[in-house]
Image (cartoon, rainbow, N blue to C red):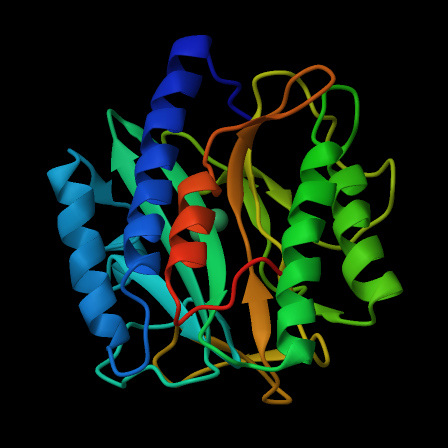
Length: 266
Ligand code: MG
Ligand code: MG
């Protein structure tokens, strides 16, 4: 069952999504070698609660943290830990916020100087693939048009591995609603996109092969070949002509550029 949203509900999802964006921007200002991802998780939870929200992920299927922080070969669902970040790490931060009965969901991958050109290229192309997907998220298209656009840029053009096991999703009152939004697929296939459908598009793209495995913690997804992975996610609403992106990278990118420990402008 696909739930289309009213304009009022879309504004509530925007509010939750923008708290996610501000939380990630706050963490962007703190990233540096020597800090722990558990510290970032604590800051994020406090920031979300200070803004009247609840971390969507905490307690979701018994997930124990407020954030997913996935470093290097961790693709998504990484546990925050007491391990310290180090130079050259790729750090993917995924956050959900629940407020006023609605969820927002967004993710961004940062690089601590300097992971090398291959990893930076991966980040650039993965972020570009998110926007290539969003460009197709317009009324009259199908889910497969989004999926194809992401896969076309990342896998066919750049020979990266697109993760198959995890996909984007509808969201609203629930963090995960129908339809699923894969990052691979055929043009013109799948569910029709109608106005007022809210979805999260989230390419998970590996520098090496597409294959992943799950850690013993039951959550952390890693690349099988140990190569790094990148992940960017926006929550957006399907419209005629052009999607309305409900989360925002603007403040995140400003914070990224201002933090001299981070690669920016890629
Ligand atoms: Mg997410
Ligand atoms: Mg998501």
